[in-house]
Amino acid sequence: MSFELINSTLLRGFGTTCLLFILTLVLSLPLGLLIMFGLKCPVKIVSWLCRIFVWIIRGTPLMLQLFVVFYVPSLLFGIKLFSFTNGTVFEGRFLAALITFVINYACYFSVIFKGGVDNISRGQYEAGKVLGLTKSQIFYKIVLLQVIKTIISPISNEVITLVKDTSLARVISVAEIFFINETEILSKAIVWPLFYIAVFFLLFIGLLTILFNYLEKKLSYFKA
Image (cartoon, rainbow, N blue to C red; front, side, top):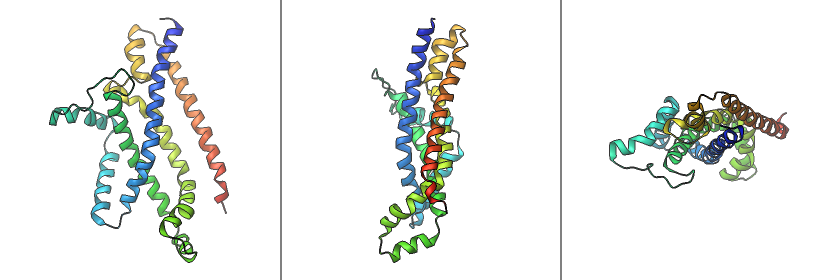
């Protein structure tokens, strides 16, 4: 295989990797916020169910969750949710991986969000009440901005981990960069593309690191 052909093949897989990463991030952040509200819900049954769900997701391997989401509906219930192919990246296997990644990372994000909210002192809420703000105004105008500053570092770690975790999608044959390399390149005893893939990920993570460092500096006005 020529360098041009290998390059275009890997770029196709890297495009799927990037799409899985972006969609997971866009969907899991708001879902994580919703789960966080469930964890802090004053209705005990709701908070208890959310805690059990988060415990299960965080306590089991992501690879196992991929197998469960993709295979269990078909094996146990005869429902072939993810067996379709439509000639685009949004085929059944990709959607199964996306659903799994979104649920998994939403649970991790929810715990980070909860920790950030819990670190805000009660005085912040009381000051908002004195100013005549409603609970929603206190949360969005006073608490949320401080929470973002507090959680930006752990969130950045999870986002960087997500970049690397996308490679697990290959276990259900999602055509991301590692699956493409294994099936179309490595099988021909061509090893150097592995280093090429490493450069892809190093550059991707490097850009994310620069972005999060910039965000931390922009939020530095919260320092005393």
